[in-house]
Length: 187
Image 1 (cartoon, rainbow, N blue to C red):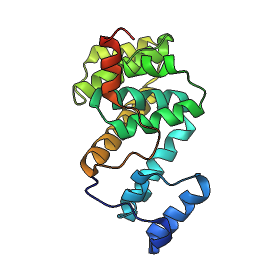
Image 2 (spheres, rainbow, N blue to C red):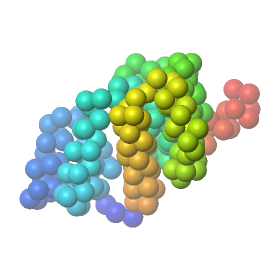
Image 3 (spheres, rainbow, N blue to C red):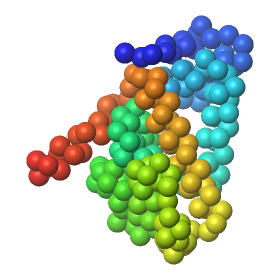
Image 4 (tube, rainbow, N blue to C red):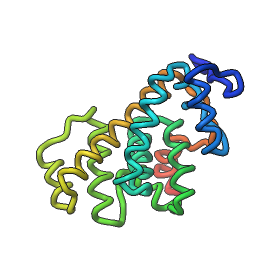
């Protein structure tokens, strides 16, 4: 059960209505998370601005994989389900998404980022100098590293918000527990 109720786009007023109407024009459906954020137009507007800023630098495929890694590590099924939808839209395979859930990738540069994201999520942001050095060694610049850290932080915001709000999953459901049980059964 949700602790907050999503705003119906048709019932929103003021700045929330403008933001949600804009989303409804861009998306096939406004996700529950964004309709919940709409209770505070300041938060929704800031979230959208922060999210849109990443469209210029980090490739969408990498952003989706980071979200999958963070969601799996934290047990955040809303974000995991959402990220799977986005990753499939980007053409990522089930194998690539399952590897990301383990913080892994067959691509060396991507593996460095996902390993870093997994450690950051697991250790609540406490990464070592060696962890940061691994990103540099994989070929990431200081600017790219800052963007990676910021995107992990955005993913953590999504995790915390949806866990606390108990957001109803409005995508095909992917459960973090399913990966562990499929690995234990040998599947």
